[in-house]
Image (cartoon, rainbow, N blue to C red):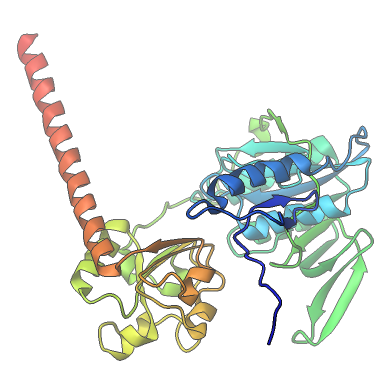
Length: 391
């Protein structure tokens, strides 16, 4: 018989300087106590324990440019910033140029300086102005290399246009990088092509682990674009964003998805919630096989693979096929009665509750919010009329 005692992973722990958890032997966590306080303090301790990458006066610069999304950098952008920070030596500073507003901790991401351009929102199509802004930043800091995420949401296009305009050497779809070389797949991903580090590096997704053993200086720089350089020549005109019903959006393109499984019985209530949240509708294979949803809504290995920023799973246990379909989702929220369901291990947040009751409660909360807004608007209108009458 196996006499080895299993170490309880929920025991109190400390965070080492390398960011590793060390369970405190001889101590037991009290019921319901777990990491909520410990993890918060552990997170701050982890940041405090990490050393500064360098305290040397900079002599060279690496520039990283990326678009922000709702005040944050996505995983691909953080990986690109980490790549620059990892190959920078002690006399090289890492400067981050963000197109859009940024509210995150730039030091924790490895940057020494942050240049923020809140006027360039991801929803705004301004390729000429962005190119001029990037060129102006390069002229101001003279970086030895420029890094951008090689994505389809603006950064990859910006990097290619800058390299063509500046007649700079460039490497795209980079999957391997160090201080001396970069490498990309060729011949249908059956061979490598490598070269010395070029002027512009467009990094492929998941080429670098964004978790760093150090922090950057994190200095925010006030920087204004030269209006003459940043003015468009009129060759590109932004026609704006066309709003469409989220239910008509292909799941592969949806940024917000609510998905129903076997625990959802009231489909109309679920669809009302999706419409209220402005989310696309997905479903598990069980819900599709039962006829509650059409086949084009199925998410999983035998259905659609999605990359939503937010994915809410109502009443889905999380079979391996379904988890494969949501592996690239950024934030997963699970609503399930079974705390040990596989979806709970994948989820960033799990609500242990009945899916149907949660949907009903959310619909009621949305209705109450709409009613409160309507009442507030009516009161404001009455007050305005009364003020006019008094005048």
